[in-house]
Image (cartoon, rainbow, N blue to C red; front, side, top):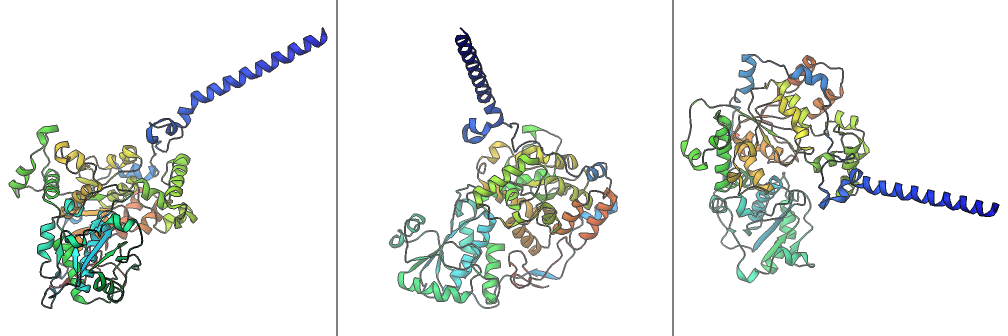
Length: 523
């Protein structure tokens, strides 16, 4: 009897423990979608979970923000801020001093395959024309690769006015839209499937003119065609004939013009920034044609363009802390591992070290505080040139509080007007570029190809462009005891000579960022 009682007790404990295990297992299954929502949604695009990287980031600089929100600026400060740059004694000068001519016989066809985003490709196009000139070759309209980040398959002819491009350069370089039939086999797919004698894949970064003559010209002479891939940043900035440098400038500033729809949409955005109405919704939307037909109007309003590249790609690569807590740090570290297998130089430094060296992109909150410190007030019309902001509207909310009149493509153009460019990162960037070139002031929150391209293009046009002192600003934001007036004074003192003043290009610097003296001459 004692033995039976013992067995009964043990069996009861066993089943009790089993039922507890099942209960815990059931609870675990129930809570899985809450803790790991990305596992239970298509492609991981679920609403925020307990451990989501999208937890709303809180302002990091509350002390400064409290001082910035009620800010006031004097009329004189506003006048100085918005006044255009004075003549700096330089004028556009892209025509070569020697007589332009086409060679009697082309050495063959040059193809280039350009990766990167729109502005990296833009610079690559300029270099491609220059290389074709160096080799006395015929350039095939460059092929634009699909970038894994931007995911836009738009071709050259879908972004740039190809006929204008060819016509402007017709007396300098022979350019064709496509290869003749005998070379139709020379495609991107052909070079992706094996080693090909006509492909040049060893072009060094910033290669010299002599490198192309020694390594590419023989291929042209043997096969009649040479395809260069990769080609980004594959031509030196120094030790080139002035005629080649002038040609690069001519391509960049005269030949590369966006397609008509991009220009019309850009003009619509500019018109609505300069002449805002109190009407809302469909009533405020004029047709693109009406806007371009109206021409100049009186009482032109002023606006500043803020280029804000703060996507996940940049945030991860910077390895900086953006105030999103452990969830954000883990998410960005994982993204860094997937994209670059952890090979990111900044990862070896602390956030404080990176910021003190000016190596962190400014967050929307930080660039907003910088603009406020420079004197832009809450009546400033601010155009946001941006693709996707990491953290969404929650990340932008502080910037919007500082600048309630902030606009972008979506707020200024209807769905119908944006139809041809929607979902196409390069075309959207083209609209932003066009608007940026017409703004009274331009500022970028971080270095990058768009920043570099616009800094150079606006210098060529003598337009005011504020270049943030990243090291100074990074150090200021590390100082948590600084009050608003101290911050404001330090920012203004540190940016007096960073508003578009001409800088002569130094050795190894880009001709596309520093167009003087290669693209400009003394007036």
